[in-house]
Amino acid sequence: FLAYPKLAFELAGLPLGAGNYRQTSIEVKETSFRLDGLLEADDPALPCIFWEAQLYADDDFYSRWLTSIFLTLFHYPKRRWEGLVIYPDRATERPPPPGLGFILQHGPIHRVYLEDLLEEPTPSWTLGLLRLLILDEAATPQAARDLAGRLDQRPSELTESQALGFLETFLIYKLPQLDVEGVKAMLHLPDTKLEETVFYQEVMAKGEAKGVVKGEDNGRVKESHILVLRQLRRRLGADADAYEERLHGLRLEQMEQLAEDLLDFQTVKDLEQWLDGA
Image (cartoon, rainbow, N blue to C red; front, side):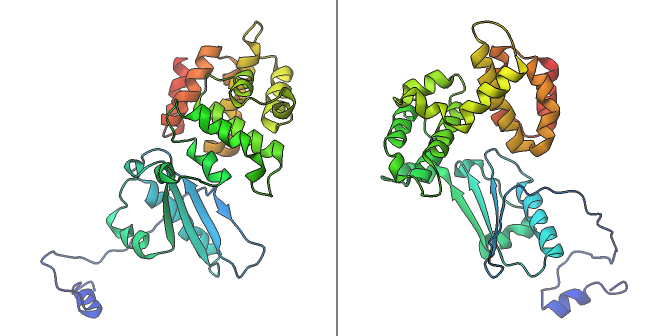
């Protein structure tokens, strides 16, 4: 191959290109990759599922995600696997690099676009919950009330308080100006129901423990703090805790603005620059 690199083309039955090739050797040093979405079955004969929710455009997503999967398979070579990537819409997806396009087309990769749920006349309770992410703000309150009204259709694996907790979290994520009282009013639910949710209890417990600020907006600041921290934990994992103290120094309007801006951040540097300028 050093003397005649085109031997590779002859062996592979490929047409001899006009380009000049040369033999080289490279060392690929394995960097740290994180896979947050991995579903593993109790039965080892069943495939594991690598999943990722990609809610913003990222030209390097497929390179990073597929590399993470293959490194995992290198360490656990006997695993069967499937891949699932969730986009809000097709416009968010970026094309894979040329060397990985074949895997997306012919490998065990499933791409889901939440915008397709808008065409579903009667989605399941859980798919209806996901649809809240892409509904426009005007349609969100009625869709949320519909979900609250058919809690009996939720999956049996979810308790009523868990289902309401998800619904509450999705609403405040989608409409960060809402507080817990606003959610109660929107869903037309008695106080006792939402007060049983984990989200509500986290807001109250952490807010009281920290005593974020004093004043009439104290409750909303507590809730916004918990919301932003939960969003960060989804993006950064345990590393999000390093930013908790800096969040406590933000005013209510800053916290609510950060909850919205987080949706557009692509790197930790974006977050740090935002906090430095707050």
